[in-house]
Image (cartoon, rainbow, N blue to C red; front, side, top):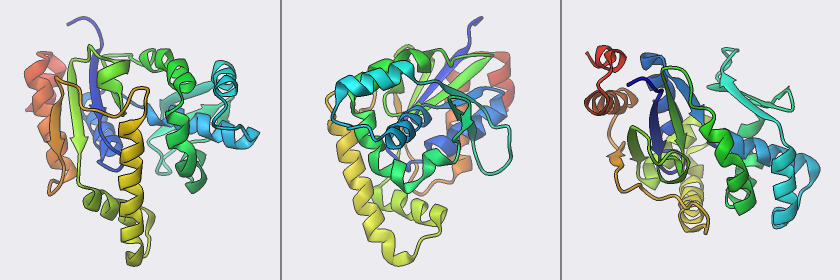
Length: 235
């Protein structure tokens, strides 16, 4: 195969897509692209400019003018990628509670989704690229070499989130409720809803370590794509 390999990883929030994709990319020498970072970057801009999220015309204008750059992490401070907004580093700003509160609405905008498709597709580069998101296998890269739908129960995802943010145990129920609501919004939006592609392999990460999930996907990729690099990484 003389073109870059594309691995699409879709699934709900908190299923481990970003962590798995980053580890796989490091092992295989691929570029990891978290497409959710684009919607979060747009959310940052909307919050800064006080944009009415129900104004599709304004959202379309904003996306048409916005300059977002995503590249491999340049600083070892916990970030997985660098995200630049008009040249400004917002790699940590996209993960704030304020952005969490609006990103679903931003991502549900037809104008925003349409405006970001080409940018996502242009990220495929090098020997291969791993894209993680909600609609990679169905909309962004429907011809991906391998499609994974990575999921986990709301309870498991809430527990992971609690550990990640260092929250109090009594917030577990609140976090699980928020995850269920996020799933509902992502799956029911009119444009590019979160659904499993017909030819995607579903992996439930409940009870599995990150290393086990990574190994499973690596084996699937080796089976689907017979390349020296993938074969070597699968040994």
